Image (cartoon, rainbow, N blue to C red):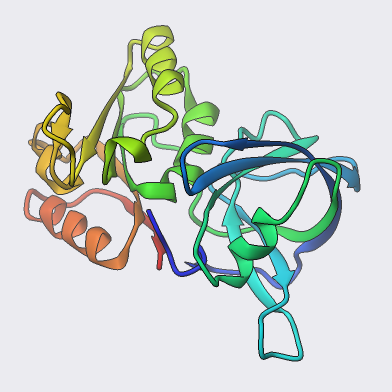
Length: 247
């Protein structure tokens, strides 16, 4: 999902720690999405909950002071020595401009972890994850943290075009390894050759929300998508819904 510099509406804590790290790897996933791995230097470890984010202070043209930009951690909390960040290039955006300029070996500092969009314990509930675009970042962390699971886990992820696809092999491998996990990738603007799911994520939730009494939902994306998904689920009944808004 393209965002206004991947800024996120989140509950930021005031006691975030400052970390220094080094860019260990950069991988371009699509024409405008990349993942960078930051290896911790000081402190040498970062303890975080799946779904949390870290924040960078970056320069912005025309301002004499830096601005803060948060990015969700896309990697599993099981590795405290490095974090993966999923980045969407936003032309002119101070956050993505800074992070896309980083090269392997560059030092970088950030603050964190923070955020309340984290996994809760629902031992008796199915989990449904709904994301659009790079809103998959915190949910990817959650999937790696929660699998294997005694209860079914489903993901519905929306993108636009075939050239926006990534993480396909990883999701297929997770589904093969963990039979309790299933996923749907849907494209809103596919070509005529696309044979997968078509349309917005809301069009692919019905089979998951026929009954909501044993369901818990995590949704990450635009405000409009989140509002629509919540209304759709609430029309079936009440269940826990956790949300993270990407602008």
